[in-house]
Length: 68
Image (cartoon, rainbow, N blue to C red; front, side, top):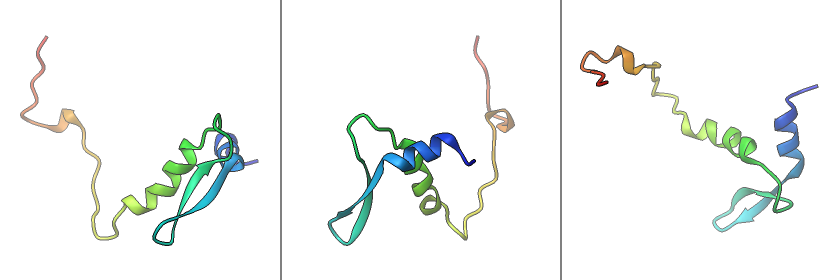
């Protein structure tokens, strides 16, 4: 069955050539939504193989103070 929203985004996306032999996702129609597909395609590029970041929380910060 797959992911309904991702499938909808992929069905309206087109790949266009950009300067410098790059490719980019574009909407086939002006009212189409492809944000989820763009985020999914950008995620691997934002990750680095030699950089592992552990999740942190503001609550773990010993210098955090809350003002009410």
